[in-house]
Length: 208
Image 1 (cartoon, one colour):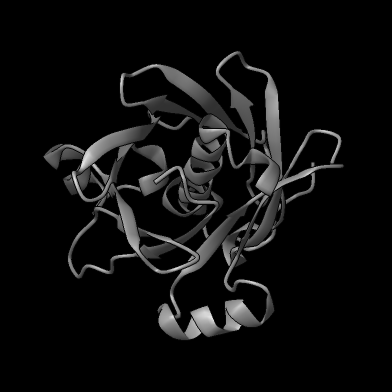
Image 2: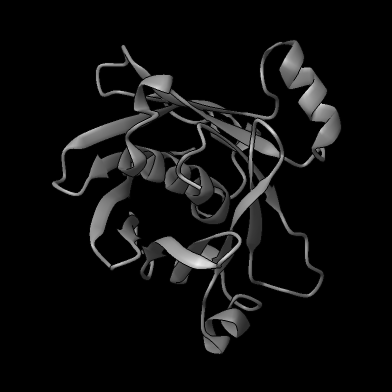
């Protein structure tokens, strides 16, 4: 999975289910490379019908196809004012964290590596799936998320994929850095699974 530099992500729509799951494809050829699924208790699933999802903990497992091996997990505990999401590899080792921006109207978060060093900020319309991951100084684009792939080839691929897909394109300079790609893919999934609920549907991301 982490050999890919472009990922296409599609949510599986399920009626009468409070658990979210996604298919992950190679964005260049449409080949399925993995899946992301929430793994939460029956109690948490039940509570989601009577409580705001943003207040409840979640665990997301990202597994690689075809052997269903675990690649990484995202975990968030109970929400109180400001959330912290942990990304851990298959051995349970911390890879990085996401920390939501404090007391913002429209949500958003910062990405840190395992040593708590600043890795990326999010710029753009996060819930319109048109945003970028930038370094702290804003000078280097680490990845871009959009509803379409750029160029004529991207337009052709749009015909192959469903309209519900969104795409993560990783900076080519990170092609040989699987941990960096893991963080970017995890952050992209976290937007849809975690931060969308925390923002209560706002489509604008503050730029700080």
